[in-house]
Length: 139
Image (cartoon, rainbow, N blue to C red; front, top):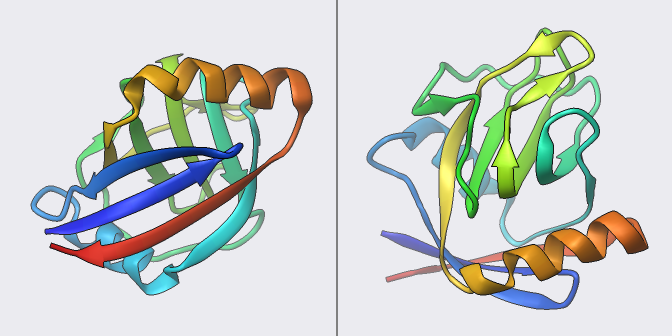
């Protein structure tokens, strides 16, 4: 199992990759580690933060896909109808874009630090783009 440490807006979270349910998406994410970017607040989807990747497109099948990730679940939309993106739910989410409803591959779940999700989300909402870092460790 691969454990991931996320730091978002200076807040630390421990997470696990959903390798049984989304092996190809997890392999792609592992290939990016360590990963640094910025998150911004979602525009259409509800209480979530996202990392837009623009026109980038990954040839991934639907794996463990959802339109309603629970708080602490991260999804990857590989591109197509809308732009490629990572999205992390911190509250209720109905994943969508200006093109309409979407589904993304649920590949990562926060296991420790869930009580800090609302603080992180509100920080991004009210203070703007925040640093995002993901580091992996095999356990």
